Image (cartoon, rainbow, N blue to C red):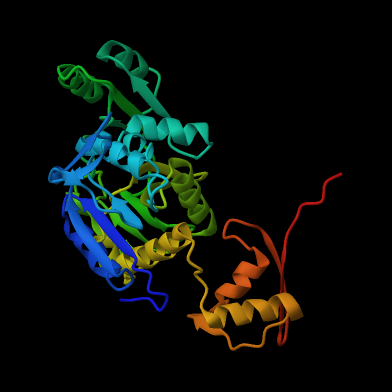
Length: 366
């Protein structure tokens, strides 16, 4: 597409070339004038005199937006690329997120620091300390390696004896591991797909028989699922503190509410798109385009939106029709912007026939 102001918007997707990455790049071509697919294995970063990001040995082109993604094996390279991109174009993932989110231990530490609810978790350096912990906790327990995606490296032990046997085997690898309390959830977890300040899609993933991992890559089955307000808030908060504008947040619903068990900054799109019926790739592409325009200083409002905004400011009133999604009313975006309402806020709603009043709810103190 070409914009009326003749500004050419260019974007790139740096990835391992997965189907999800291809879907996203294709969706981005509806909005950006140019979208390149760059393979992670063709990228390198040079520091010092020739500092820069290189693709196949030549300096990478200038883009307005770059979506960087890939597996934990490339976490350090992805962080280096993102660090050098920061400030030069819009990137949806903060540089530190590549090393934090690709490591379950660092993820849990970041969640803990920001009071995001999660299962009770123990980090042990060796089998000796781990076996001592086993005598003080309830079974079953989950055992994880810090690194790994799609549920790999996740095991369950239903007794001290089975956990001890696993520890003997894990000890040979000489690396830290995580023991986490088991949350009874019917062998199902919840995937919330966050794009910006919105959960654009969600699903419940049910593990196949004999499995504890709900991941669809591990044979799990996805089912439509609508998050409640608390689950939505926890997912958005988790994505925010981890520095990811685009990510999957996995949760269990415990007795006291949702608990975050994992985050994924390179989440697959096939499963959640098929289950939810939401074109997640298009949601991502549109968000990236709007954020890239903001970064480049391009006015993102259409003429119609400008007129509506001006009327709201001048008259505090807007005459318009209503859009319904099922039994819900969807307010025009200019109304949301004018009120400053946020999804995680508290609001007082007063209704009578033909009238609806929504006000921010503030707790009176003293």
